[in-house]
Length: 344
Image 1 (cartoon, rainbow, N blue to C red):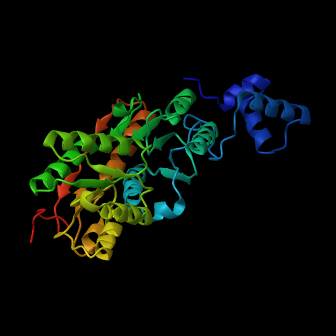
Image 2 (image 1 turned 30 degrees about the horizontal axis):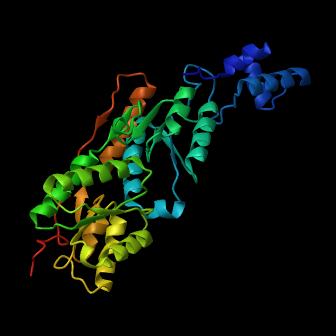
Image 3 (image 1 turned 90 degrees about the vertical axis):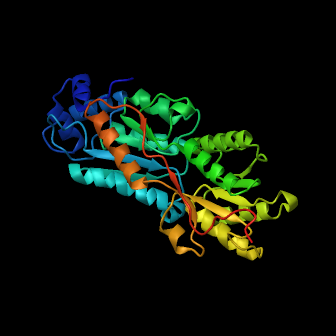
């Protein structure tokens, strides 16, 4: 890991005091034009960006008590996604205890996300960051490790081949519980409306679905990729329900928004849930309890998940012992959208 460049490194390169560097970058009087130019040149050579946290120099002056979170998702989609609202709420519950803050940015892609993290770290705007939407061969992890930036991944990094501190939910175990439940209800044709196939948790869920279906002797489940939106969930459901004798008798959705959309599509097709079709949502939320029928769901404590991620990151920042580990496994909550496949 490369050492983090500080104001003192810039001062040493320019042959001045740290106070002089502060004067130069705050456009304060007391320096000659030549000295000011020399200081700025030294900062540019070292890739140093002045702190925007406006903190005085001292034992805590080199970092802000702020955690960073960059999400590569459209703002509109994020606003409709109950998972992220609960996850951020969990992080905030820990920040409140420390009188700390969360710096949140929405970006278009991972390259832009890495650039934001790099900018924040060099400018000492954050003391560490949370990584979400982990992927196989994720380029963010080596890039941030090179900076020496404390990072905690919200996802099963080990299964995806990464060496980074991580907190995760056991998605494979949750998928297995859902499939076993549907199989016990007599469902032999199970399908899934999933998320982005590039995302790590999608990969983990897909592998688990195929493994447990094969173990139970079920027909190979069909998984359709989406962007997690209600519109994409509805389109995927229409495709599945239009597949003739391959039409599933049960569908598992990777979030609650798509499951609600699937419920509406079933009605379009004249199908009654759960008599003709059983549905299970992921990320149980208030949405699942407001539909008719209410949606069976894989429920987990997303708020607690966010809180554990934040606590682990603060442990890392404060150089306390911290290790990767799972949080509570999602559990199935049966409601009105699931029933035996041969229900009258």
